[in-house]
Image (cartoon, rainbow, N blue to C red; front, side, top):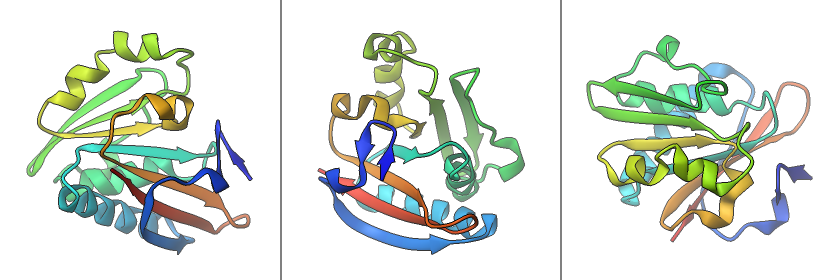
Length: 158
């Protein structure tokens, strides 16, 4: 199964969470767990990989909720490229690389400055530039199992 530029069998991280979800509220709960794992593993970078409509933004809503950001405030930054949210427990930078064609474009967005700031950086379509990211980071892969079920695999890359 191909997800963007990365194949499922290309895993190089350590699997730290795996779940099957069917409902959006389950996806939001997994997002909350992902934030806790990022904090536990001391990384602020969360990379999301999955097909169009797989649930990347829903996961980000869950991460945001864990930071005190209302889920309804979190929207896909496909056209804006970056959304910044201030929550009661911290800040989240939500990026979408779907429309970017080169790592130079990523750098022009100020990617390195965001990662170096306090806060959580969540990137949709991160697989387009996966080998440019510096470890450590959390990678979340979302695979369709059937029409309504998704498998979510969370890896820690050190």
